[in-house]
Length: 324
Image 1: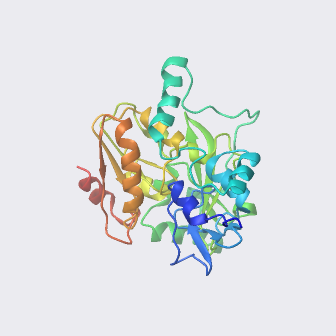
Image 2 (image 1 turned 90 degrees about the vertical axis):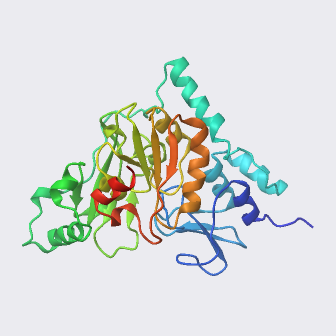
Image 3 (image 1 turned 135 degrees about the vertical axis):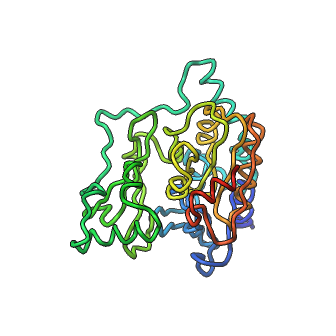
């Protein structure tokens, strides 16, 4: 009799952290951070018995074969072969970032390629929006939702507008602040953050729509100067904004993809790279640090914050003091 496919052992073999209890984890399921939407709070639940998965943040769902394809970027046949054999050793070595990143960087240095290649799109990507932030007016109820949210996060509309952030009131991204994600001055993806009580806090531009998939990008990349002394790596967009332009980049979650590592390495940071994830994410910060250290000349450090807090909870002046 065949031994059932051990999902826990499989995830461990892929170095994917999972939780078996806690917020967002249903009975009989384990939770992981969804690789499709950059989720950082274990919203993707995997049923231990059926292996059916579902992310209630971005609604990505499927069976075991599609999960393996999603996590390892392999073909359907390879996924079926994996399940049939009941294997748990790696098809692709996800731990071996060094060789994978070096392969990308060698193509850049010796082959004249770019770290990221843009997709073939005839039209420029447009971020859906109905209002610029300076157009929001307190006398209108829907505008007040945006202004209240911005104020509660200790920002001003003017400050967020400097990052190109706009407001969408209608359609698929209704009642969301819209964050353009740029690469070399061009909008290549975007995400929306709800200002309402919608349980789906963040809604991302799909890979089919994006010029470049979000997991290949760094939020705030265009504001960084190649060869600058220091850089901070954050989880999300608000954390990045709190540190300020030219100080930090966001990775849209708690882990860095190979492409994000290569893009960061291309910046040639000279002295210090700080990893500033949420206060409870030290395991994830340590994993990033271990992957990054062999790749960069800068010293890699972890910024330890209070449990339950993220950089966005601190005043900018205090954050900058912590990384001096």
